[in-house]
Amino acid sequence: MIIGLLLMCIVWVGLTVQGVGDGGVSHAAMSMVMSATHHSATDSQLPAVSSHALSVLLLLIAASKLKANKGQKKTAALSSSEEVALHSLVTVTPSHVITRDDSSRIVNHVLNKHGIDDKVLMCKMESIIDNTRIVRRHSCRPIGWLKRHQQPQERHVDAIRACTELGTQAVIASIDKAKIEVKDIDALVCVSSCVKALPSLGRAISSALSMPLETPVIDISDVGCGAGALAIRRAAALLRDQNKTNIVLVSVETPTYLFTDATHSMQNLIKCVLFGDAAVAGVLQRSRDCTCQHGRSLILCDRDAGEITLPDTRAMAYCQPTVDGKLHFEMTKMLADGITKAGPMIADKLRSKHHDVTIAHVGGPKLVPILLNAIGKHVTGTISDTCMDGFAHTGNIVSATVLDALRRHIETPATNIDQSCLLVSVGPGFTASYVSGVVR
Image 1 (tube, rainbow, N blue to C red):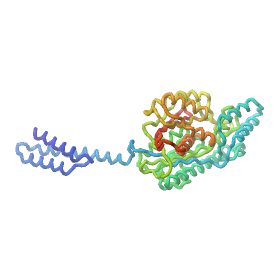
Image 2 (cartoon, rainbow, N blue to C red):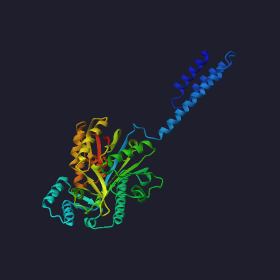
Image 3 (cartoon, helix red, strand yellow):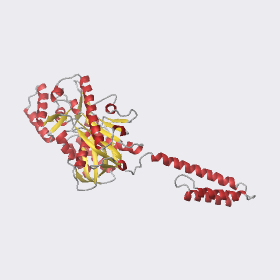
Image 4 (cartoon, helix red, strand yellow):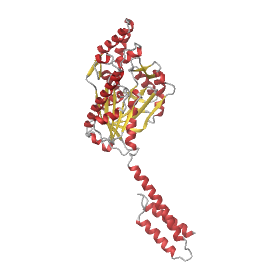
């Protein structure tokens, strides 16, 4: 019995110290066991010791093999501690420009159609237009075309075409900046909340790019402005969990196709002067594989990323059909209450309570300070101006807004080599998503 226990100890020490470190069994450990079992086998008084020692050896070898197999499976996935870089962000806008004066003419068109001659209301709308600080927006179609009546099917088909072209242009520009080719794309993550497409918009873009048929395409929709940070998180998780090298993320939004003059409600008038069309694309890679040779990247931190959904808040922001067959997006005054509640909830989930810079998008210029103030009571750091700068030149481009703001921030010369950064985007639902990282 004592000899058997000693043999078990010899086997365990030999395997642990000399053989199991890499999932295998060393020759030295095997020699130790075989030598021990040989001597025990010649002892006529202990005939069972040899078989006992071999049984122990076989069990330990099986355990070491299982450990090795698990290790091999994990090597295909990205370690949670390994850095993921988002870089080569590119913003593409369509050629048609909507100026501030155009916005005033659009409001006049809607009011005139409904026979409203209200100078007080028009003055209020002029003040709102000024408060947005939007100098210009972009549209896939001229204003005249948008104001004309089309059958819902005609407008829908044209919107899918425009989204596909805009998204494809953004992807091509991004991978060109990243020095990779279409054949190098391992997966495409496509975000859009303004167009319903079946097959999906991501599939349409992958087809336009002639991507290999087996390339995975992930579509994210119906999250509105909140999908910006959410899409980054989803793409980073895909890179970490799968044996992927290049993940392309594209957000393409064409809210001008939702223009309607069927109602003269204040919310519809605000929508007419706030939204613009654009697409933003970027590439996610392991930091060690990063092909971006110029400019900075956002190195993502997976521990400070998440999303929240407030219950019973659908009435804050939602879409509903109009009498002319279009979708009308409604943002109510209750949205500010939801943002005020969401801020502390996001801050509470963050492990790091300091970020050098915070970039946020919540739907409108007046709502941004509400969210930042709610988060700022718990998280220290400065606020980036790039989101408001983007508003001035693109308007609200829905989920693409926070990505465009990140691009502007990355391209802005910085005194700090590394800047911790928090991205927050809020949308209908009520949903809020956030990711963090270091701009390096």
